[in-house]
Length: 264
Image (cartoon, rainbow, N blue to C red; front, side, top):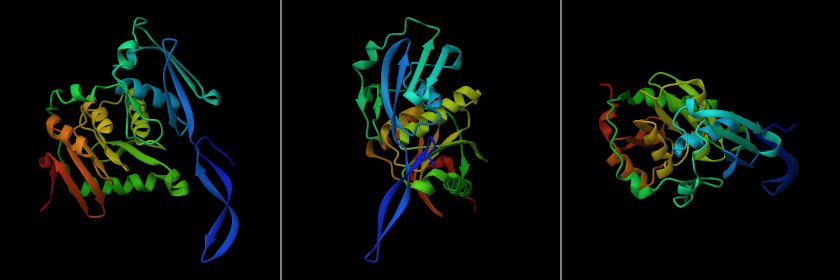
């Protein structure tokens, strides 16, 4: 049985020299095209669920949308893989963003419009968020527990927005940056403040993930995987705590270690 998230395909499973014909559950990958004020903006390859959240999160991350109040209308045509968004400001031009398009290291078709050099000149965050290291480890464990699509397919990344006590929003997608954008879009729709929040991720922390967080004033990003050199450089400059390899009882703190409290 197919869903928006996964499907089944016949395979040959080879184990110990024995071939067995069976079915395997695989994650669905599909293109979703976002139109803004009647013009085609970008096509993303994603897990085709919550595509309205994906589109809104992408626009907010790219600075084309600042709040839900900017939105005039949003229409989704899921079968066609289309999201049509109109802003109240009909004069918003996409031309200035096309010259700054960057193909990212993300899964699927990662395209962003920020200028990496400009981002190095951004103002550092000023928040004083701190969290118990044991609590951070517990939330990473909870992220893994909620990752039902990963458990059944092994083909997606997970992302969560949390406070210091619980996971508020959770999402899975074939793309690390898509999963984060869906979380951002969900927060936008629900009117959830980013104050005192952090990102918990399953995948690599690259520069585009770091900058999405920075634009939202997210002070801490933690992942089971590794950061890149540019994400570490940006986190250091922008006063963001970057934590990688959160697995079991260990973690690597790459920047601004004072936000991670170690209980006596």
